Image (cartoon, rainbow, N blue to C red):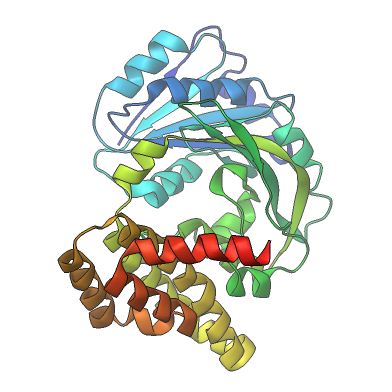
Length: 341
């Protein structure tokens, strides 16, 4: 593991940061791939941190694996503030990279930022203001979603996470996107950080473990921007990996759901988890013109048992897609709009 500081005219030296009262310092953790192909977004992400009205801040960039492009981009592009770059000697994955960043942080408050997302200037200031008592361990906020090709931006409305939210997190798909998450360092350490090795829902898993012991707070306005590239997102989406991750998440939390809420807890946990997977599978079916590919996919769903964890109506929809393809589903959707508008 190698560490270095990349700085030009730094706002704060490491000595100055160490002298700051711990309760005031926010450590911002930005994980990035070793040969990131969208370094322009990384620079924008870092610039959005430097533009925060809240001070003091330390910025820790975690390069997840060996490579040189990230260091070059930081040396060439960062003009104002000190950035600590930590290079992992091997690929750790998103959770491992974030844990490494927190392990090297000095602040008592931690904020995460994905390398392709951005913050609005008052994001940290407004979230830190919500830490009004020791009972509050996590603060979330709304965000904008922006298409990096067209530039179109829209607000993502999510249900606010306020107070005791453990049951709500466990039984619904609601939660805080990682780039909009602010957490006390003590709470992060208390639950052991991100659970490494998960391929789905690692941020939700962390929030669940914290929510069992601490309250959440919320800023009900968009304070960040989640950038997405539709083509890259579609190409990189690995549905088999997602299915494995969802099954893993279910196995981790099903006993807790049963203990806390009985059969209803299991049913609600299944509904949102496998509803997410069902939507992904439906998109896969709709894009597949070959009956043989649809049959192979359906057999895989039977083999893993995931089809039986979905609702009855969803199972019927899959059978319709299997037999008739997407044309029938599209016709039914149009008919519903006409009949029930």
